[in-house]
Image 1 (tube, one colour):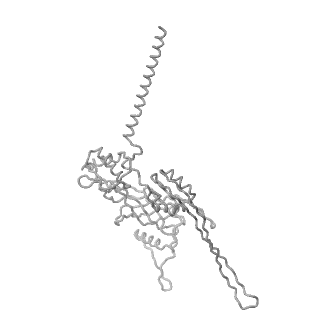
Image 2 (cartoon, rainbow, N blue to C red):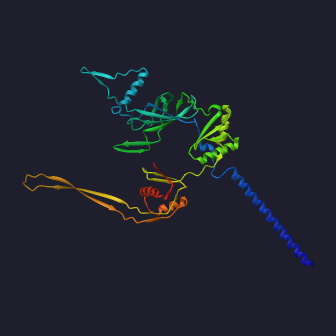
Image 3 (tube, rainbow, N blue to C red):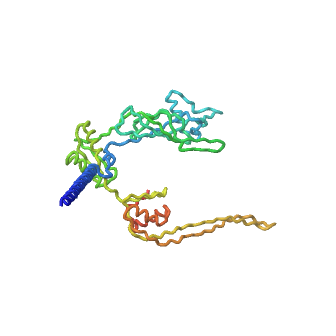
Length: 403
């Protein structure tokens, strides 16, 4: 009897320990799931910062352009007889420096222009740059230098003082410096080897800003506008909700599917902090519309994850035309007055491959769509025509865009 009680007590103790262990394990698992849920709520999956989704109205780049000369080339400059504007530009530049060039010479009582100047170490170039927002006088920006005439290379050249103008014709920067070209090349005895482009290069920090462009961020009353990069009503509404959750209802309002109006502080210093907080908000953008992009020049086909297919039957046969032309010569007989005549004879053949109907199964996701299209065994060029026909038949559930 005593042994039975002891055995029952041992079994009861073991069951209690197992029960306590399972309870503790369940508590730990629940705590892990709770922490995961909190983290998922704090930063949603695939969330992006607002600064990656929108841009501030009025904060934009401004393109600049200028015309100048690159000198110091090793015989790879413009052939001035074929590019007379290079000689004209050089003469104007030297005249501004106080050096006069006699452009005419008298011979046998006649005056003729000196067009035979050979300046193989000079090249006319177009200089482009981008003026960033809030740029101030004295800042340096990068410039791109591109040959305008027939220079073989501008490698090792120096860009002379070149004013860079905006669309309004005002000078906003001055460029000058040594051109860095990423390509290389050599030629000898009619053979030529070239790697990358030699007629264009860059100058890092080669332009100095001389005039600032006003970039008003906020309008009257501290109101600023943000524009969503990809127009989407759902994404716009999510951004508005995130801003209002942080700063209170009424702070942000959607004007349309792209524009968001935000009421900010009046003090410019506080506006910077206000915009920074908005840009660091995490927002999960809406799923994009189903779209297929066809590049007719390169034969590229790109589709996003929202593309789906309905079942359809496709038959596609290749049509080819072969033209074979041969030249036949008709010679007259001996001692005759005839002439030898050449005649061209052409044979045209039309070939068309047999195309049988193939079933394209429905695809609910991108992987199934790719598998169904690959089963057709069509080339990218043929696939472009097939996708357009599928769209017309209503089997392709996506917008088709040809670029």
